[in-house]
Image (cartoon, rainbow, N blue to C red; front, side, top):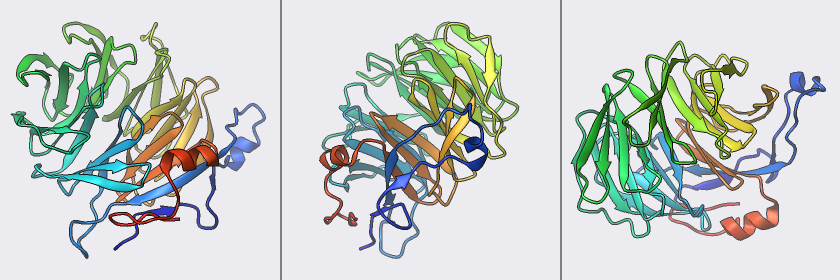
Length: 353
């Protein structure tokens, strides 16, 4: 069996965030110090010798112990991060899976993608529920509301749709800025849905999706990711133009930008109220201090475009077209061993040192 987990450093078990030389020379740069352990999940094909799938989406369970991932092999995988194993391989999709979302209580996992079907799973048992909502177009984004009784869906069309999660019926249809929507996020206070797509416009709605709060051209190319800080003070958007645009939740018309990178940015996530992680086509994760607007450190290890990230309680997860998932953990070694289990053992496809 192919090894599933391997430590990312070429030598040793620790992967330390290192500051680039140009930033090191800048005494004003805000520096993030500390060792982050990095593990790599290699996603195997269904059969030995089959090509491994790319990873297009990752999502951490609200309890932090489970991870869901999906990609172009039409499968959804649920991983036990403590044991380092795949506990469920969920079948039912017939095309590329692009979006995942856990319900706020963690009981449900929903998935969607190019086959236009919204699948609903029991996240604990992996059981597929008797729900089959067929969306008119391919699906690129899914998000529950704060109560968990509604699901917002976007995709390759100029309409967002809101479904009841009790009866799984269509409740509302809302106009979107363009026909190729790629990013969707609910604010931490549950009051704003933010979205973006091909035409570079960022749009905010109330969670009832009945009022547009913001509609602003923010990017010159497709918006790929949006994010809110946990303290609900900052909003960020990023995309294929290599720009990250920041705005205050309380004054959204006023914007500032981080220094532009040459790579396309496909994923962003706040890892602290003042720190934003970005990743994209240069295979790097960059960490930015949003107060100084400076890049403070980088994480490398992926060998392909990074298209998805999620973060929770000191754990950053990234998914890539290199067919791997990386788990970056900032907690100390003792906490890591307790939470994620031993570094040696057997799994469906192996867990390693």
